[in-house]
Length: 103
Image 1 (tube, rainbow, N blue to C red):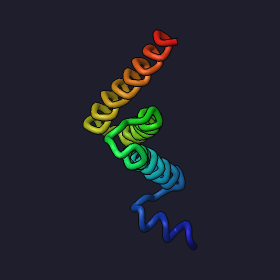
Image 2 (image 1 turned 135 degrees about the vertical axis):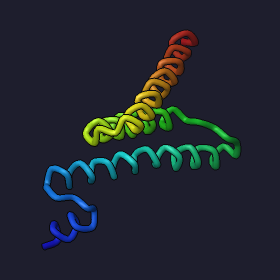
Image 3 (image 1 turned 30 degrees about the horizontal axis):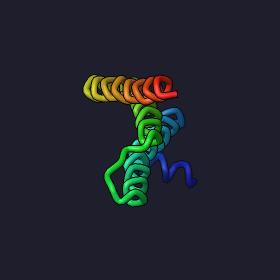
Image 4 (image 1 turned 45 degrees about the horizontal axis):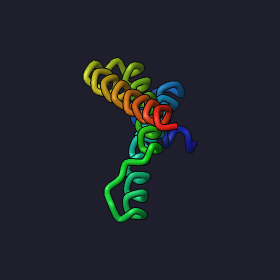
């Protein structure tokens, strides 16, 4: 009964669709979590900072949303997330390259 209610609420017709929508919601939560991480880090330092964790949340959320967009076959969503995933990966690459040079 609860599953049927949830499927109705989320406008899905199958368990596969339900799991993909739940995955998409978790992806969006992961992506949103990056702002919480950045906000907490900035408050602690009393300055606007972007911690490395922000980029990990961005990459994980971006990859999850990209997967969801592929499943949904949404070209606008796919394009938007693919560019973001590249940028998040590149930022992590630059951070670790700098650390290697400095050590």
